[in-house]
Length: 346
Image 1 (tube, helix red, strand yellow):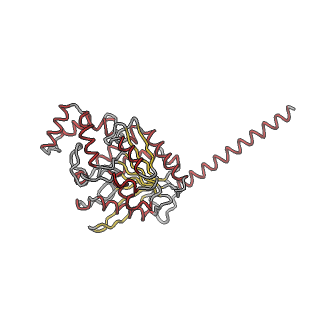
Image 2: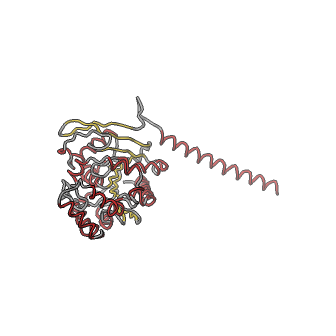
Image 3: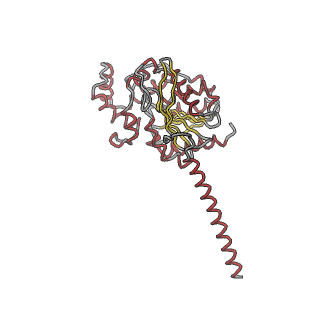
């Protein structure tokens, strides 16, 4: 009896060992596939420079692919307007482990892309057409193309979806309201009133005088506004990729689109509003909001009820950069949305 028992235990151990070996082999195979560079010719670590056509001629924009997954390809649209892809580098700590391919992209005028120094090119419809040209060059399509837009990138992503959603598998609108008018109202009626009245009065005075180069302006904004609503850490502790991306902001692009003030829009986006058009968006859509964001989290929740197939992710510890200050909630929610959408038959 003991001999049979020993044989049974040995067989059972062999079974589990074999199963583990198969699992490890499969995992290694998946990892190997994810890391495989399938490009021909000289390999560049995933970097591809895309030539785009604009009303002012041809220019080059920079992209870089991380990983390889034929079913999930996530294009990242950074905010600002005018920042760079670099603050998305936190994605590297989460998405590769899940086998998710993602693509860095510097919009025209930012980061590693050409900067024509022509404000006439800082225009929302033109940026939408730029994304479409990038999509075509990278061979992204409705079976694998996911687009994540954060802040200003959320405006771009939503506007792109309204025109080209037939090319999209899934859409993520991160920390961006769908109405500049409502955003402006929230900034003035909610966020501004949370400031110390004396601090707000001085900020308003500087803005009234259009003295935006005054060092005192940022000295007041950073501890009283940025560290509470942009990224909830003391500014001295902000992650290096965030500082690097923000230090490179194209001021011409930023001011042209947003305006110089943090408490009121005055640029080209001042009247932008697509709230009534949201029902036209039929692709699976994730809206991400955060408790301390510059964007009203209730509006972000509302977005998910307006699109045809919406989901809401709430970061209860986060602010505008909730991919950093509520990182676990943000990344788990993003990954779940990507994988759930991939499994769906949409």
